[in-house]
Length: 300
Ligand code: G4P
Image (cartoon, rainbow, N blue to C red; front, side, top):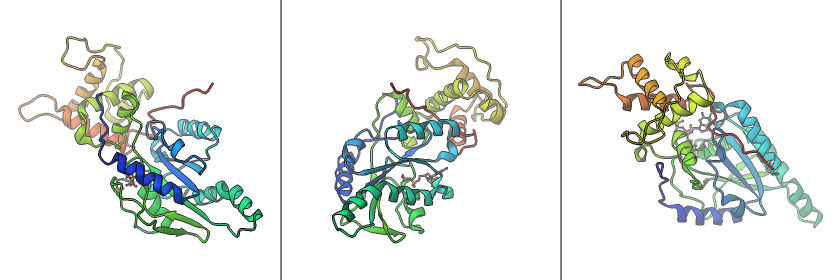
């Protein structure tokens, strides 16, 4: 496979995640709104069975709003309350607190009926690297406390952050690993930064992004780089050094970007590496616009 997930710490992360889930009433799963399916872990349904569930479509500020609305409906239809959010700007942080209480209302009412005094909710945040877990914990706790980064250093003893008087949050996130089911998933995770750039051929990734944009978001490349997008349908032949299936139109677009931005190598010739970095950076920071990489599958 072209995009490889790094397997380090997976078993440890899984064990810690399972330990943490036992301590909480609600599992708040954060996914990247630009690729909610690729940025989920398929095991979470099993691991969080019997717990309250919420999905946050985070980084919604970078995703196509119409597609995000469809994803919300998709998860809600599965019975999982869903919130689209921008943790960086603290959009919908309060809504999450309310939603978490609501998810637990039924359980607390049951416990109260048995004479137990409870209106307390314990929750944890979980997700694959880079989806915004630490940013969420920091936003909810009102301080810059959660460690950012991708180390699965979780929960020995369970440290809790009080979010208001009845809501407690585990202070370290549960790190999940992506499902990595197929090339598209790998590509989406590489594009959204959940996979380290060092393990990726970034020129190929940028070409994949250009090919996707030409098809799914026509006009975006012209608007940003002033290049001509006219389609030729041509793809690389098997006898070319390029990966079979690579769009020649994408390569031409990349060359045009190099020319327009003066990305030229020292001895002359186009500098694809610089162009690739520029395109990926523009996509990841939202400068290409609000773009979603995948749509929800049709339900039967
Ligand atoms: P993690 O714990 O799940 O690994 O993710 P973390 O919170 O560390 O966030 C990863 C990156 O995503 C950070 O950017 C963070 O600021 C950004 N981020 C989190 N939520 C959102 C959001 O809703 N919208 C947008 N646009 N970005 C978000 P960074 O560049 O790695 O760090 P920093 O420069 O912001 O500190």
